[in-house]
Image (cartoon, rainbow, N blue to C red; front, side):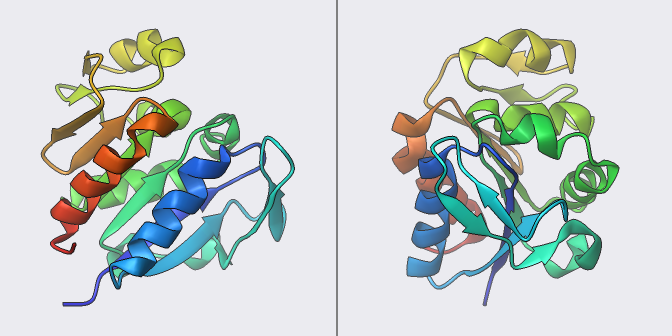
Length: 171
């Protein structure tokens, strides 16, 4: 069964946390759509590396996706300012689809209000935000709690993507 995953992007994203998932998903035969906020057609990373969005968030429907990857860097602080981004993530979560956030990406599930009662991890600097959003925060490489998959940092990408691919039923 073909799978379709959104990768969210905004300015100041962490390079590895966008490109590693995109290429790993494609390598596994998953269709990937890069979804931006619509503030720009192209978004620079923290180091200036550009990522062109395939579509803006207003052009997508959660029903058309099997999951979402929420990268870190400082992009999540911009992503979470868009109600449509938060709604998209909440809709995917409500449907039991994969919601995967790495590093500062945890800020988006905080704003989407989907962490209550969940076990999760993130970059340590947003630990308090995650706890205040209602999760049981743990310092582990990758945490899977139902459809929610979280990881701490770029070094965790292999375990993070292994969990994502497993949740999608692909390898």
